[in-house]
Length: 237
Image 1 (cartoon, rainbow, N blue to C red):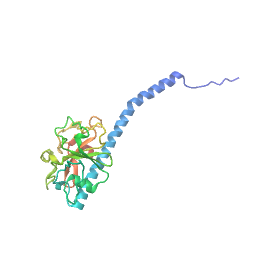
Image 2 (cartoon, rainbow, N blue to C red):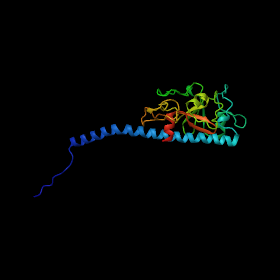
Image 3 (cartoon, rainbow, N blue to C red):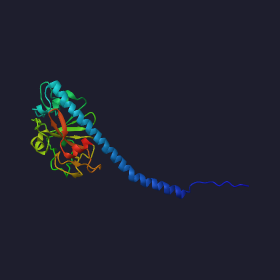
Image 4 (cartoon, rainbow, N blue to C red):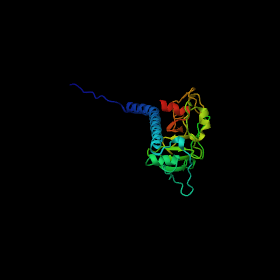
């Protein structure tokens, strides 16, 4: 008579296997989530920069002024709304109203949330006078409308730290995920760490410590460009 032997795993073997799977998951899943979030931030940044470039170009075509033509700072002391009309007013507020839909004016950005400036950057555009808008995508854009004037890059000029420092009112920022944290400026992990030195670029390590959600940008003419080496690195990847 032939006896059939049953094969299988013991309870101890199953528990050990589950334990190993749990350890591997604990190690890899946070990294996968972090990499996904950083990739998403980069994609959102490129999309929003493209949108803002279209805003400048559309405003120039429809209303005959772009970022270089902004002459009126905006503040409505009555209801804090953004009601400027691009047919009569040359302001950033008017440009947004005339070219974008489903935007929400947030007022002064520091009244809504706090941005952490990168400790590695020597220049940052964030101050209490920045006025912010929430886009349909959920991102926040902001600019200091009290100083947003003469945002022109003359023929032969290049954007560098000197130009940026002399055009502080033309610097704003994009927070790609809105009020959701970390609300922290992107920073260089190595290389040149000043505001913007194209001849001395930096790199940004794919780590949540460096590749965060806030990106300084320059508004000029009909164009939006990065205002720091770190932001430039992300956009060029």
